[in-house]
Every structure is written in structure tokens, then in C-alpha cells.
Length: 65
Image 1 (cartoon, rainbow, N blue to C red):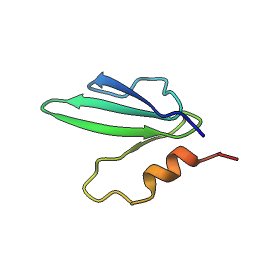
Image 2 (tube, rainbow, N blue to C red; image 1 turned 30 degrees about the vertical axis):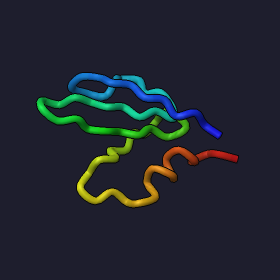
Image 3 (cartoon, rainbow, N blue to C red; image 1 turned 45 degrees about the horizontal axis):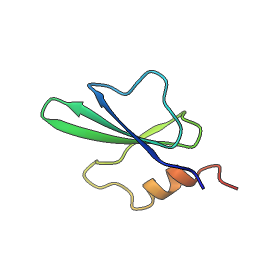
Image 4 (cartoon, rainbow, N blue to C red; image 1 turned 120 degrees about the horizontal axis):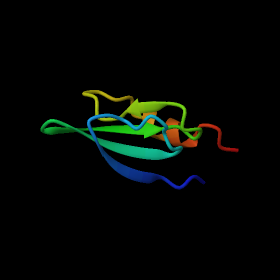
């Protein structure tokens, strides 16, 4: 099972993403949340108005054996 880690950053996601990571990105007065996949290749915004209920689970289990 993957260990999920959290990072707080300002304005934008970092240029190189870490795998299995939740990024809290401060944008003005709000905070956007992104979840990376198991490879650190893709980041999915998880605080959109209607996120798919299985997005979080799919992103952290992608590539699990």
C-alpha cells in the first residue's frame, strides 16, 4: 500500500511532482488541492465542485499490484 504525503505550496504545483502526494496550493484567498498518481506524472484537482467519487481511490491505487 502506498503512503500518502502532503505538501503546502504557493501559487503553482512544483515543476517535478512527487508520487502519491496531496498538494495544497494557495491561490490568493483560496486553496486548491491536487492528488498525484503513483508515478508522479499526473496531478488531479480534487476540490472541484463535483469530483468523481472514486477519483481519489483510483489515483492512489493506480499501478498497485
